[in-house]
Structure formats: structure tokens, C-alpha cells
Image (cartoon, rainbow, N blue to C red; front, top):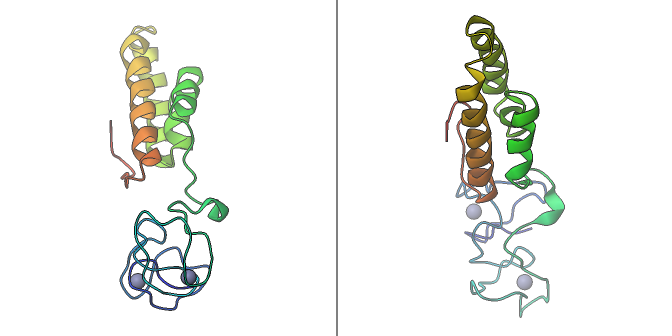
Length: 140
Ligand SMILES: [Zn+2]
Ligand SMILES: [Zn+2]
């Protein structure tokens, strides 16, 4: 296939172009099938007839879920929403941390940590859904 940003011929499996460093299908300046220039509003390449959708559903990787799912998971188990958001270390620390806090405060801390983790899981998932890069320790 061709890079959708610089038209360089790259591997079909490449998620990011090794020449220009741009993630594939986030921009579509060029057709991924033939490398001919295409316009942002085009849905099909007029040179080779391949469909040029902006999001590549077939890749499967980085598929964003609805933000309500990690929010709900964080409601059930503290840190689980963070975990499914890809923030594994943060999820584990949140899980252990909220247990310790709840233990010390006889469960009172959950009034604060529970909504915080639910909102955090929701907002981080929303950022990921919008295609933004989220750091391992990024909050809200
Ligand atoms: Zn490129
Ligand atoms: Zn084409």
C-alpha cells in the first residue's frame, strides 16, 4: 500500500509510515491503493477505484470503545476502567490504592475515589475515541 500522507510505498501491515511518521488513514492526501493524490472529501479513488475511508476498521488495533464501558467497569471494580483503557499500571495502582484508602477510612474514601475513577475512565476513553494519544499516567 501507499502512505496516505506522503504516497511512499509501505508495508500493508505498517500502521505508521516509516518515511514521514504519520499514522495511516488519519490523513488522506494520497490513495493507499495507488498513491495518487486524493481530496479529503473523496470516498473513492478516481484512479484505481479503491474506497478511501478515513478510519481503517479492518486493522482492529486501537479500536476505541464507548466511554461508558470503562466508566461502568470502574464503577464495578476500582481501576478496571483504567485497565481496559490501556493504562495498566495506573489501573492496578488505582485498584490497590482505593482498597488501602477504603481500609484506612472505613470505606469513606470510596465516596471520593469512586466517582473520580469513573469520571477519569470516561474522559480518558473519550480522548482515545477521538483518536488522541493518552499517556500511561494521564488523568482526566
Ligand atoms: Zn508517509
Ligand atoms: Zn487509487
